[in-house]
Image (cartoon, rainbow, N blue to C red):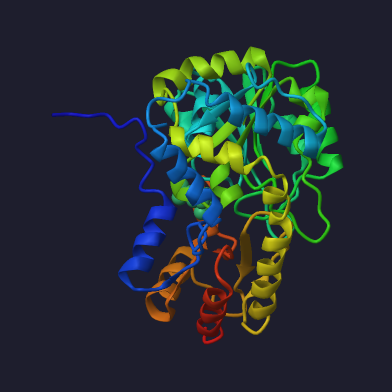
Length: 380
Ligand code: GLN
């Protein structure tokens, strides 16, 4: 039988490829972003409590209202901005589903979507799957700054959306006030929507600030914001996240959401709603990860890898011109197989495969894991 692939140029996601390679070679896995330590025992107890109490059937389609209320409070506390839990917040099966749904509910065949490469790997294929056209703007190390003139030139009458991701995966770069002002100017008086992927919102370092688009009324009114409890609670395997959007966009989002997943894991939602009653549970994340970032970057200084700036996310990128001129995919493979440390080659985040000889390491790991990994990396 014949099947015309809807994504002929897409293979298996690099996260799966590198994690599998790491497992196969018993390497320390600093590739796919996930913690190797446990979440709070209190959270586990809460999930069992709600399972034992019989909360094991469908949750409401948009998510438990108590959880949506906690999210609204968090947004108010952090960004002084109001989202109506009834109409403007939806619980999703992780950040990726939130991103897919936000795109699926607005992108029509032929619509153009502006994406900044290196970009998280689900954006472009999702746009393609929906019949949209990806317009890529490439950013380069070490600063990965956006040239907004280039963005202006990329905009056409068909531009439907701009996707921003700050703190950025993989670069660790954050949007600053000047970037936000450009975004406001560029979208003012247009029909351009924004998808702001803010899953690393709490992972911000060295005095940098997370400028959520929700802080700016001109952007908030046209934006979907996607977020992830996996990053917030060290529970990437629970696959629970959420989306924030003004009601006119959220009503479209829910039309798709209800047929994509209908609703999300009930006892976990109850548990998270309880856990978030204490804001300290997320406010302390910044220090928790700053310590890990400092440990990892200090250790890496003993290697021949050159650190790139990192203001947010739990990823540290490095350049390796002092080590080799091989392709980043080749070096990532070799480091895994020969040295026992897995990373992500950043060319995987460029739709054209642009290779700036950069590798991404995840530092959401126990101190001993980071130490062990760097001992191996010093031999490279
Ligand atoms: N967000 C994680 C990362 O960047 C991976 C998520 C996934 O594997 N889908 O590594």
